[in-house]
Amino acid sequence: MRRPIALWKIAAAIVGGLSLTVSAAFLAIQFVQAPIAAGTIDPLRLNKTEFRDRGLFKTGDTTYILRFIAKEWVFDAGQQRNLPFAFTLPAGSTVTLIATSMDVMHSFKIGTEPVIPVIAGKISTHTITFTTPGTYALACTSYCGPNHPQMTGTITITP
Ligand SMILES: [Cu+2]
Image 1 (cartoon, rainbow, N blue to C red):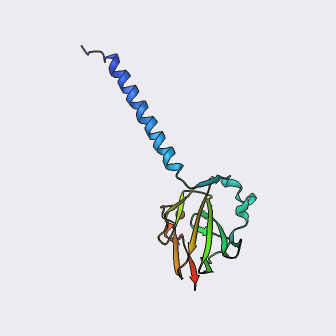
Image 2: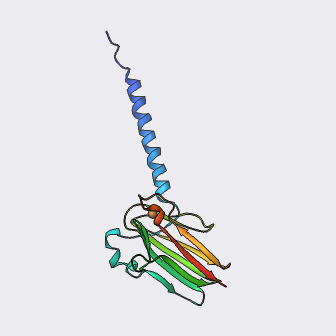
């Protein structure tokens, strides 16, 4: 004859499962809400938002905004199809990159700057002052599908 399972064992299993679920949810929230979200946006209506106007915009003597959409598999700053994401600025320029995704999770990394996650529904911003001339590679560092390695670009800083 089988022994009935003790009630306390069932209760312990439920409590254990619950606390696991709670910590998993907590971790997920911590991860998703990394310090990148500068706002939220409807990824299905980007053409009705500021992301309709993509590209490089001068906002002051040495300040710029570079607004783009990350999508499978390109950084779309409004450049013509098949043209690279490539911008040139003088040394001393401060650029605020403003990005969102219209599909899966992407990210961008420029030179030695930290990785900035780019997520559908969120606006990510990151400001960089380029003091040293050179060509800075930009790349998606989140595996986003078979053509992920194509998600690249450059920012060239002239003396
Ligand atoms: Cu990507």
